[in-house]
Length: 349
Ligand SMILES: [Zn+2]
Image 1 (cartoon, rainbow, N blue to C red):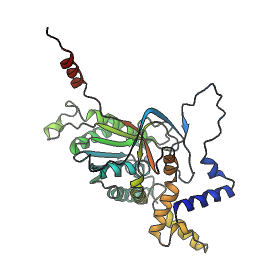
Image 2 (image 1 turned 180 degrees about the vertical axis):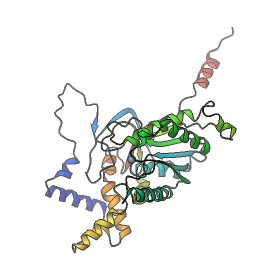
Image 3 (image 1 turned 90 degrees about the vertical axis):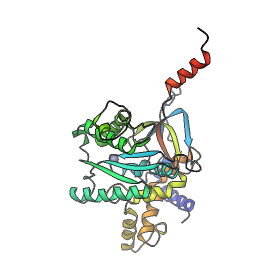
Image 4 (image 1 turned 120 degrees about the vertical axis):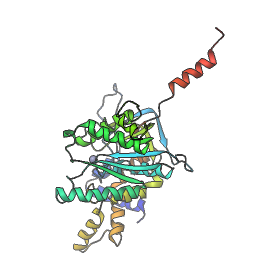
């Protein structure tokens, strides 16, 4: 079914059920007195997905929209997409990771937990999510996936310096230039793993470039890694984050859908579409949107329900589908700038 027809129908259906979803797509009423200026903006949501956009964002005055770059401008550069759990990158940043890889980056997916809390039993959860992580990496176009296997939802029971040290090793081994990871200052996040993972990555990015940290690495042949830029994403629904970069992921939305379908053990995607299709068939019904086979049902379910918030959010920026980041740009070369100033202004002594 054409998306617009589906949306018209779903919004109409929601209105018939009391209009909850339709109302959620409007800017909510505010009782904020006029003497105050809002400092956070509520993010519209279809309420079709438990995870896609946070409740609020604040925006930087130099926000930029990053669009698809022609050619392969990132050829020779290395990207590390780091996640606490197998569904973090797929849900919040898969479009951007796929875009950067398509633009020339060599990508690696690094998962820090063992995801034991998401599966039929803890043991099955570990095995299923290990496979899912590999499949998601393949769907993203990554060269390789790594897993650290720290216990799920217990990462604050692990020594963050050990996680950080392992990341420093990998960043140096892979010579990482760019990271995509959870914002280490993700406000109101209930999940302890996210905060630990974000903080470990942040420290590792800085320390991997030093020549004094873990000097035995250099004896083993590694070189410092200079992580130049970072894309920090926020987790919903609790997130409340500064956004200065909107990435237009429209050309990569189907890839993002496939990456999420790879997450069978965790997250809201996986085989949810085929399960809904089977449930309806048992009642003698079908939803035309879900098509006539399980693969189509899984794809359509993710694209039309779980990705709808990305589309609704993107509309505010004139794009079809977007992801939002606190982007940290490469630092200027201070010494070069000072020398350039000196060269331009020096007079005979
Ligand atoms: Zn997570």
